Amino acid sequence: MSIEQNYLIAKKQYEKWGIDVEAALEKLKRVPISIHCWQGDDIGGFEVEQQALSGGIDVTGNYPGKATTPEQLRSDLEKALTLIPGKHRINLHAIYAETEGEKVDRDQLEPKHFQKWIDWAKSHDLGLDFNPTFFSHPKAEDGLTLSHPDKDIRDFWIRHGKASRRIAEYIGKELGSPTLTNIWVPDGYKDIPSDRLTPRRRLKESLDEIYADEIDERYNLDAVESKLFGIGSESYVVGSHEFYLSYALKNNKLCLLDSGHYHPTEVVSNKLSSLLLFSDKVALHVSRPVRWDSDHVITLDDELKEIGLEIVRNDALDKVMIGLDFFDASINRIAAWTIGTRNMIKSLLYALLMPNEQLKTYQEQGNFTDRLAVLEEFKTYPFGYIWDYYCQEMNVPVGMDWLDEVREYEQVELLKR
Image 1 (cartoon, helix red, strand yellow):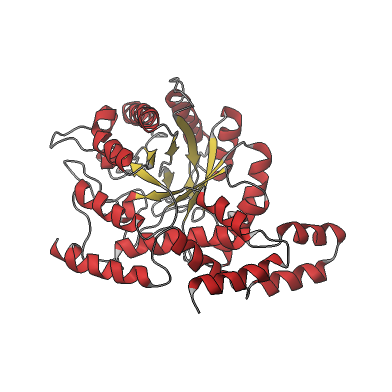
Image 2 (cartoon, rainbow, N blue to C red):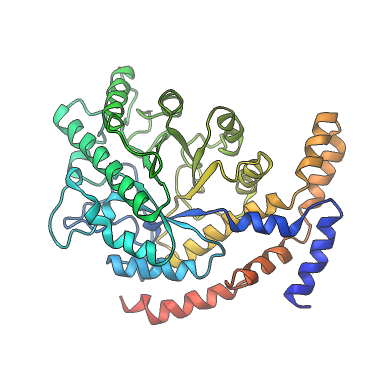
């Protein structure tokens, strides 16, 4: 049978539960995913003097075809975007500045160093998000930045944070879409600290200074991101979840949840409903931890489905800003973008095709038997037929056809690098 025939059969099955499939697809079209540029070059960036990765960040694998210039990275992103349904955003780090061969340290970065990214985004009708880069730098080699006891080092990173917000504001104004500017720092200690409070006080004061500059919220939204532990900060991270959650709520900033930054038994999906009660917006970095914050390409696993369900059934598609954060150099990098982003979108579609109101009613009635039965039944509903139809309607490859295009691009472009 054709894609259309399969779609109509599946559509009827969902409609028996009162699910408006066409309305679900229309909603899905309007949800942007912020796709991280750093999957394409293994978080290398384009600084004149590149530094080795630090801050507990590592990328493993040596698959051929890594982007080594801004033009290559943008070309690879363009290819990935042709394989992903919907209209999306690109997430940049400060290390992706283009300084035309001039050494410009991070505290001296200006909007002009991202003009080519802005022009490119305009030509492709894309929004951009931004992250100051507090790692892979000589002034971060001991694992401390905004909480550093050395005021000179701390001030350098404060200036970098301020510069990043000005850049982001400019980007948002140029593109007519607010830039999400997210601060994450690797600060922490390998062993149990004798003083937890003082570094956190310094981090708070540094953030206060960064945010003292008035930035137009029409063009820039600020977020802060926590982490439980990292390589070299196994025992203590200054910017813990409790720290940043408190800071965000008190200072009217977005709290960004990274699905790899918590204890292995914690899940981000369980945190969303609480934050939505107290925040107008919540930001996400969706990754897949394997025993630790390993940033594997996201698969359509139970937690990803649950994240989608929490966003959809709480009517938060316009409140949760979804970004991705994974990096794998052991597989084709364009395939990694495609698999991960398509899976994020699939999780939202899966959630949109659930009888969420009926399931809520069962729970309120204490009818847990019917609730469980329906949840299990829908696991084998013909969701894939709806997905195939959506891809066709959005003019992107259906099924595995995208992989043929990636293989062709690899032969024509990637293997020549």
